[in-house]
Amino acid sequence: MKLSLLDRSRTRLGASDAEALEATIARAVHAEQVGYERFWVAEHHAVPGIASGTPAVLLAAIGARTSHVRIGSGGVMLPLHQPLVVAEQFLVLDALNPGRVDLGLGRSLGFTPPVRRALRRDHEDGDTFEDDLVELRSYLEGAAEITARPAAGRPVPMHLLATGRGLEVAARLGLPVVVGGPVLDSEDLSDALARYRREFRPHLGSEPRVTISLDALVADDDATARDLALPEAWAMAVSRQTGEFPPLDSVASVRGTEWPDQVRRRVEASLDRAVAGSPATVRRRLEALGESTGADELLASSSTYDRDALLASDRMLRELLG
Image 1 (cartoon, one colour):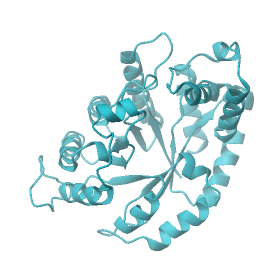
Image 2: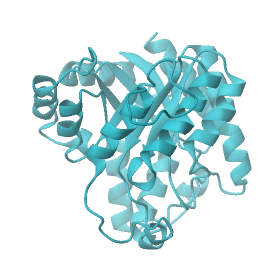
Image 3: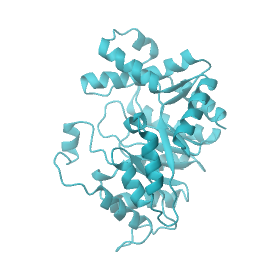
């Protein structure tokens, strides 16, 4: 499998949002140095624990600090944007970073009702997602009624974040898919991927392609790696109780906090799902995942409080799959 990273610009307790953005750029530089295929960033609006809601702007900064690693979005939430505007943003990125820009696309409408209201998506307008994908692709390929600028020298590759019916849409449109979250945990994932490959309709010679997105953290031993996964697991569990996604806190602080039973169950379940362990443990689990899914690429979406430990994990993950 090829190996890539997704960074969500997670904030840390006691640090500013600006520091989180600088850490994302520094991680991208490190990812290029150690040999990752891609470095992607995400779109989350008004989420307390995430510093960036504008992938195109952050990717411009990352592109200026790197030279050859592919950069992209995981993903732009297309229902929140006009297809032409998304095309223009990513055509500019591609013109500035020739041949190394990817456009990952999703369909989330926002984290909470107030955010959806702010994004003017608090009411149903009908599902135009598939039509918007087709329109967006026509701009990127220079095949639309109008020409998006800068004019495309090459089509910017599109990837679809597959949730719900996403695999069906990707198959119909001949798009590669990124599979993670609840879809990855589904018991019928293998059947769903087989159906995606079977029903795939090539577009301009495209072939079915599957990227698996999951938390993957490597340390010298299993216990240390599990601790690295704890801050994110804790934040996710707390958000289910409070409705607010908090900044990452240190392992010591999380361990020193009283855990309600429901939070404990959710934390443990999240830690069990994460691929976190020694190099031997992680290799074994990823090889099993590769066999069961036939994945072409792994997109590690890991985060932890300790930034130095995160960079060390990135390096060790790259080495064991190198």
